[in-house]
Image 1 (cartoon, helix red, strand yellow):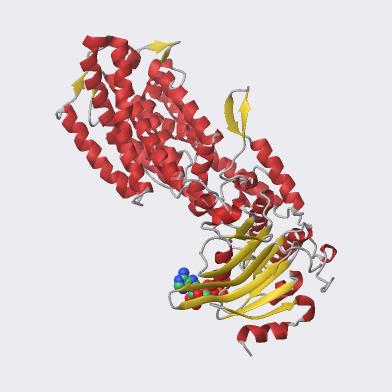
Image 2 (image 1 turned 30 degrees about the horizontal axis):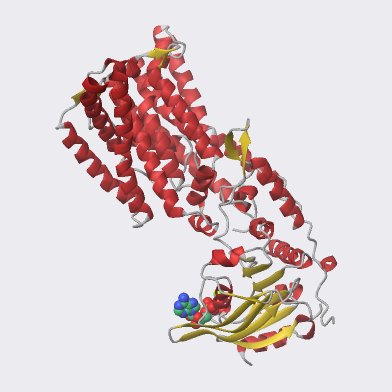
Length: 249
Length: 356
Ligand SMILES: Nc1ncnc2c1ncn2[C@@H]1O[C@H](COP(=O)(O)OP(=O)(O)O)[C@@H](O)[C@H]1O
Ligand SMILES: [Mg+2]
């Protein structure tokens, strides 16, 4: 990957303080198209605070966020989403009783007209888009009319990611995407991240699982008590070094 | 310059995820389908039961008798109209306890307005005015319910319980403590006349049910209602305006009660504050028997129609076979409990995800 490619996202000297608590101080990072960056760090290190500041949930206390070179400032997560920054939440993401298509299009459902007059939800279009999107993620689910509660945790994670992909998210942020999953399901999510990378999107993901991090990331940023403890290329570091950075050894 | 050698897509660990859950998917959906149809199966079983009873006990017929059919349909009108609105509310995860007295309020308002205007503007116009006035007045407690639930975050159970009392009091005050007789023969005709041998109020109800089925199953409003009931956070994150939706929702349920009140006063030629009093529990029961979950997120209009008819058939059928009327309560109660047990079983069955 060439350093000359313009970064999708640049975070510069970002700080977020809650009163006296310096949850994040003077943090900087970049992410390029097709790059996967892992965020690691002990509990309370500031990982969640960082992604919330990027995705418009928190207003940063100081610092700058640039999207493809343009300075941006989001006051709501919706604004960040409109600009192509999508956060994948584990439990909050899906309406279990709706189909994959229903979830992808939730809040922006396409309509068609029966006999040219009566407007109805365009379910065929939703199912078609769902099928194509899931295929793009190399996820082949046969039952497009089933509610997503019928699917496994990994498949549901894929649906949440599929929604972001369908709406053309350029940067996907995932907070512990594999934490609640069994081992085979974790592998599926890792392969999903590979797909996103191959499509030239940027992925930021938080994980405690070094195995996952080394399987999929290009770089790792380790946070400790709100500051960067170190940043490494995955090809140039080891589990040991990362653990040392995390605990401050 | 290439600085790292990230794992390429080719190295990705077996991205081909076969739909391994396919078999259990099918099994689940079969159970779900049966559970979805349970109200219609109940209804069928009930009708068969009463038919056998009628044939063996007094060699008559229960269901092939058009008079019985019409009576059951008329019987079902008011509880069904309430249950339609209640279905929407329960799917969203709420409940509307005020519907019964909003219905009474609407009946009294319709009576007063029709009586007051008939001499001045004639019978049909007075009926139209009474209809509009009743639904408009009914929407006021709906608006208040909606604001309480959406803006002030009052739990629906409490907010609508308060409105239950308010609507009840206002309805009795407006009615002067008694029923208000209506003198308008056009209205009486609407309430008791027939078209193609089917009562007019049944036609009106059927048309309304179709519209409400369409809205719930085919529009964004309906889709959002399901999403809110399943996961309000997800709905909010998807950009759905939850407050606006809830406000509309409680106005909708109040208007259903308003329509029920108008049809009631047409049928009995009188407005009565207590018109809907016994119907609140019936309408919730119809929704639950119809397959909706009180936890929100599931339910259909067609299920509720079956649920309302289950109750109507039990109530009318027991009278028909000459059983003490108190058995009604017991039978409806038993059916409700069985319905909830089926819902729980289905929930356990479809909730068993691979990773949880
Ligand atoms: N909303 C908040 N108000 C006050 N303090 C907070 C808030 N969110 C996080 N913090 C504090 O900021 C620090 C970083 O938290 P967090 O970003 O959640 O860490 P991580 O996700 O790495 O475990 C912690 O000390 C935490 O207590
Ligand atoms: Mg965290």
